[in-house]
Amino acid sequence: MKIIADTHTHTLASSHAYSTLLENVAAAKQAGLVALGMTDHACAMPDAPHIWHFDNLRQIPRWLNGVAVLRGVEADIADYQGNLDMDNERLSKLDWVVVSFHAPVCPPGTVEDHTNAYLEVAKNPYVDVIGHSGTPAFRYDYERVLKVFKEYGKLVELNEGSFRVRKESRDNCMEIAKICKKYEIPVVVDSDSHFAPHIGKFPHILQMLKEISFPEKLIINADEDRFFGYIKEKRHIDIRNEKTAE
Image (cartoon, rainbow, N blue to C red; front, side):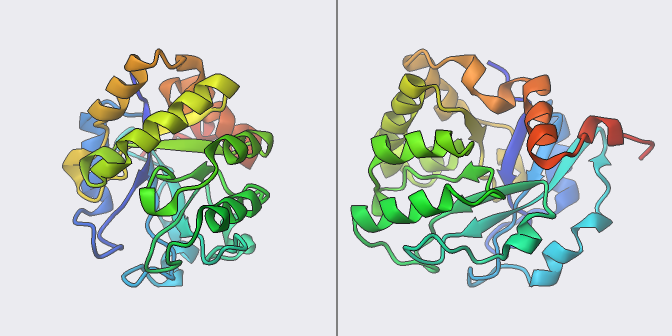
């Protein structure tokens, strides 16, 4: 299976990451990707970039070295009511929005707390992806919530970082993937790279998907037409038509 876009990556604008955007683009090109999500952490994270980082993203060309750059964010769930640490006006101007729980922003609570938060997040029209939701500290009612994610058109992320740095997440990720298969819930496969050499590399996730015979048609970023079509339909941005001389 070929993944054509890595839609969850970080630059050194998030200071617990270690590569520049140009280094990430070069790594994406080397990995044979056609698109790269630039999704640094939103501002409630202790080492996140200033809000001007996101306000100024249009300085970045749409295409760099033959790779489409998605101007995005990894926003944080700020509380159990599903509020985020970036306002909807800013989210609406981005190409790609990943939303995740992080303990420095919202300490872990109960399964019910996390479930309620995700059910509210699902209603936000500007959220594209639910990030690394297999994290054990933020366990939720998978069956109930994943069906609601599908109802509201959210993509569920299967995150290589959950195997590389959060190895205790594997069983949860397997359970989430099986439920997505059962209910035909679309997913994205991402690296969550914090260092350029990890971009475009998903060995553990792809092996897991092979083990459960996960349908390729449900993986949005396994097909170029499917991937860019999703963005065009949701964001009204035809990224392929914006490819010009670099």
